Length: 233
Image (cartoon, rainbow, N blue to C red):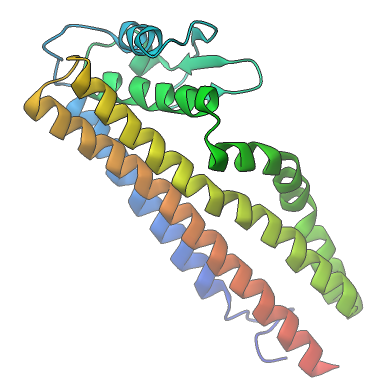
């Protein structure tokens, strides 16, 4: 078979490219966060305080702000309306921490305002989880038994997971855009502080772009492997 299965699989180069993209993006966001986590905001607000003020000024009173252990584990849970901030964000008054907290507020604001891409992403969560957990087992079974329908099903399941990641892009970019606008309009960050925070959030956005690129390369690999198996039959 052209791309190999039991022997050398040349399509692994696609996986390698995806891994390198993700590693590079992760290194960039860690570097940016580390740099600006050493810059204290002039307002002196912590991430938690900034998040509370932004939410209140936007008329959002039903979102809880909680501390969660870990590093860069910050997220907004629309199911429970809970905004969780990590160790490096919750009690830190750095512009990096305030920026990340504001980004999560951006998601809470999206939820409150009925932002359509967020609604689509939320609806796709169970589909994406199902697809990502079963795609490879189904696809490998199709390769082993040379059964075309299983190969197609595996590709379809993986495509569902990729679609979720693609929809995530506008959601994340929009949350960052909202965050920067809110921070500046509410006087929480000023001038160079906003520019520094923008660099942190832009670097974070690159991780989502890299993840989508890696998944698309993996999808291409599945298609190539399936095509190679069919050509052998």
